[in-house]
Length: 313
Image 1 (cartoon, rainbow, N blue to C red):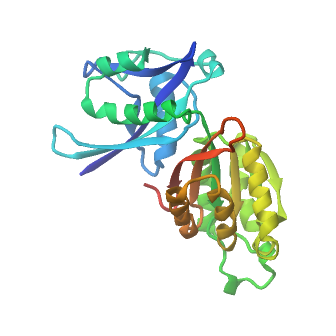
Image 2: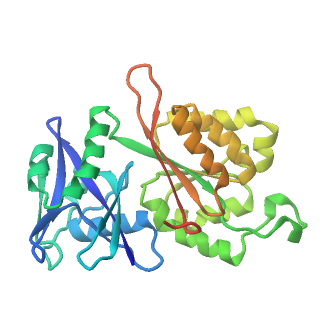
Image 3: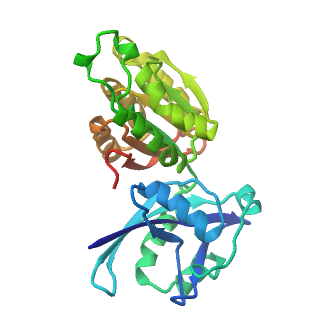
């Protein structure tokens, strides 16, 4: 049996020093990172955000994925824990609503050196190492650029009224609703989508629930990317340069053009990893975490991950 859980290392800077949050569980008398098991039907990202809120009273958005920890439990089963970095802003601290309970008795903000001394389990050092490495490279403060393929739609052969109006299937509508919490886990503030119906209907539940700004662009439609790939790539570059947390919803035939534009912000290995996005299934997404460059350097890809209600984890 495998137990899947999700959590994060919550971090902030105090007078330039990196500090991280650890929780104490009185039931086990241990110090560790906030995390918890997935609920039925829950994606790892939404589970992480939910658990962070339940165990620390903090509402945060996920940053770059740090580590996937695997270890054996006392009962012999395997536990897999997905860890992200998650920055805690001053605003989030002001809104924190923490009440000690049977799960978490208290928490503390610690320096990295103190956290290493405090942690109960050796495997908790692995995500911390990844966090420190990103901080040393000034790549810990990131924003997401999410490539989303529209949810499952009526097949082309079953629709004769034009590609722009081809609708989602019932399964696609369910996927669109499931995406609302998954997308929100990364805290996007802008959705840019193809004007075609199946893309608009994919992002509408998220827009409606979280009151996110929506922009429609013809460059993201199948025809737009086919007839003017340079215009599509220019749109992607402009969105990267805005430094906003963005969701781009488009079609499978447009993915190569979008991925090529984003690949310019990564190295050879990252461009290779991005190619996996060519195989996104309906309603799946590729989350590209970007760190702001320094001086004349442009934004840089720090991490890439894949998720969605169709693939899960």
